[in-house]
Image 1 (spheres, rainbow, N blue to C red):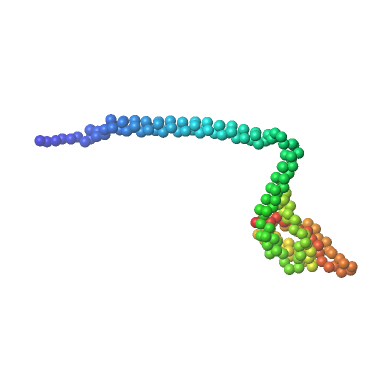
Image 2: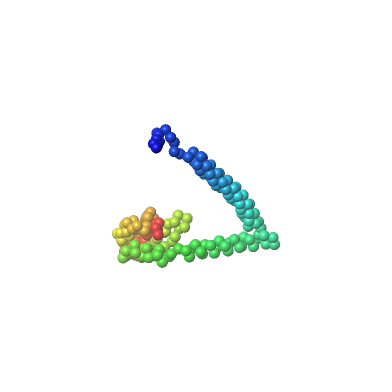
Length: 178
């Protein structure tokens, strides 16, 4: 017996099996796509319901409560603003700020006032020095420090007592980087 097989002309792929696998894969992908579409539509419905609920709650919050006068409401708002301002002030680490100023202040400078300006986020420093040379040294030290920026000498004047000049009074503004 002699078996002759011509491998060049015969195909050995099972097309029926490949068609079944492709059909199953397409069916699974269609089921997953349908599930995703239903999930998206469900989420959109839930989102619109939540938006309606939020609008209703905001309407209740902005509406004036019955039996409460306008004066009571404004008085309560003033109290809330006051306590919120206290919370903001308490959140500032004052000791680290004062330590920054203390470390930057050289010998011969005495600061009499540190005033924060919240609108510009700047500090106004008022003080006295023995001479203008010491004030210049202080300005240079503040400018070279990485903790301070926008250092400006706003004013300076000699303090005189009689005929002798006893020192310099100055005002500096700067921004503090924490």
